[in-house]
Image 1 (spheres, each protein chain N blue to C red):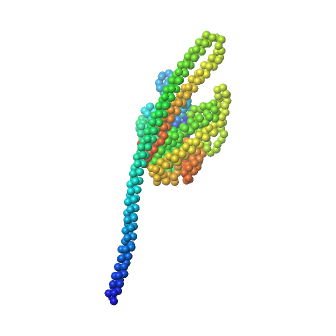
Image 2: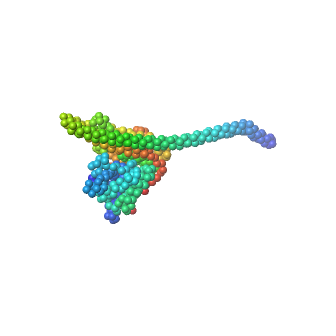
Image 3: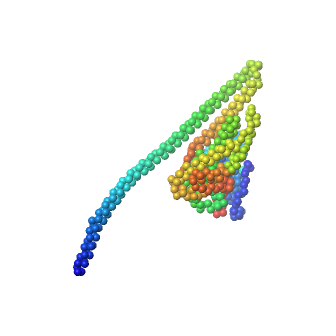
Length: 170
Length: 355
């Protein structure tokens, strides 16, 4: 009797074990396989992302360099433009002064050789010419100021400091 | 002595006791492209940072007129030697040296001083080196000298004083040639940006252009006049109609409104400032240090510098930046934002003298 009971018990255990082996283990194996596949898939995607990130990093570095280059070339263009503008204005100013001096000389000649000419009008003309001369000088100064300001402004268009540091400089 | 603007500042009693114990005088100096502010004891001197070289007609010797006198007498002919708050070359450094030497003598600042200087944050090593060279040569600060970031110093001018060293905050130093923004965490500058695109002198140019447009070219003021209009009439709290009259060649007396010509550029400046903060500074800060960015949005924004003196600017700035960021931002201003840097510098010098 006792032996039968023990055998029954062993049979029941064997049945359970058979269930585990036939049903549970395959399920576990299947899950493991799925997880393994997913992991390798994720690893592949990760390496793709890493590659893309490296590319983006390189592009960003290139672009920053490009921006820097563009900024520098823009600055030099502005500088050249300012220099040529200044030179042009200087030339025009000198030419105008020469012409004013010549005109003045002619006016005084006219005054002497044609006493009938209205001297009042000539004096007014001379006054206007002097005013124009003054305006040109003022304009030159303003342009010089503006040039200095713009060159300086573009030099410090963007300055970024990204280190944590003490507010004490020296 | 040249023209000087004096203001009362509160000093702890201990400092006057200390001053009497030793003869060392603590001084704070904020050197700016447009104005230099000196804080010494209870006095504040605001001086135009300019120099005019002239020749003595009798002796032929070179002489210099400096500061407010030079600006008043010579207008746009006076040379403002600094760019972005620092000398750019040896020539400008030499002019700065002459300026500071004469300022020391004209404003009675003795040699036995401990001087703290405030200068802008900058990557320009050359400028900082030239500045260092100048301060070592002028007859000031012979007991000791230090150079600090001027935006940070502005924050020390708040009632908390040195208590600000325990706080996290953002300082927006709205100056004449640059706007300097620094994010500070417990006495350390975590991140800073400087821009020349948003500044007081651009506002001056806009005002000049507005007046030219309004008067159809009849009135062409210079930049220093534009600046004085801005300082006198800019008011974002209450917009009052202000008429100006000039004598025009061939037209006689001519009247025009300057309130619109002044306040519109200031509003435009404010929009640019908010854009700079929300579209450039804060995104860059977020990219660099996200934790600090989040902390900054919860902390105080301190508005300092000459532009912050405009009535109503602080309130309008607070509204605009809160709207732009979608969070309520607390904006504070030290009393007299123009002189805050120098007063913060004086606090440091006083501390050193006490020590």
